[in-house]
Image: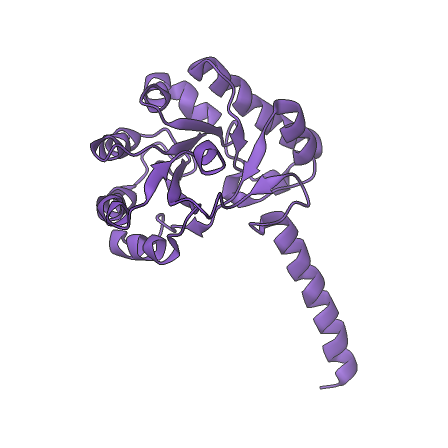
Length: 233
């Protein structure tokens, strides 16, 4: 193995790594303004839920209500239009609504115009359902792309990544809870799911089970449950 080969490989690897960070790095601002944690001086945590509404959204809202907890639901436009009353229940009960695009298609597979259409379409549907436009946007799979900066600016949106990704679509409830508790800190933004990327019959048992552990455990640590807007207040 020659040093020249290592040098070329290292340069290529670094370039690939930098490109991946630009697309999905939680602190990346390359494609559009984005945040990933709030005020670290105040004991507030933002629980966020992606991909809904789904048949599991009601159970999650019930649990949040039991603990007087507020969250932010990044709803998919198509799913919200299929279940508008369930979508509205979240905002009616004091939770914040975020834009998770119109149909949850990967933005990196789209042209800038296609990216704009997904963002604007989600904003239009959610504004009609909830009576006001969302302020926050989360890209499907956390992947930003060309055209997103213009779309966010013209739709009045700021991107939101996360401090901790719960991995609740593949880990059992206890592991999801342990993962979140290990990253719990002032201003943390936690990403969980009340749907599964538009699937009509998702399995969100792990999310519900994790919340049954997390809500009392985080309350015992004296954290307040806040919306994304509130952790930046």
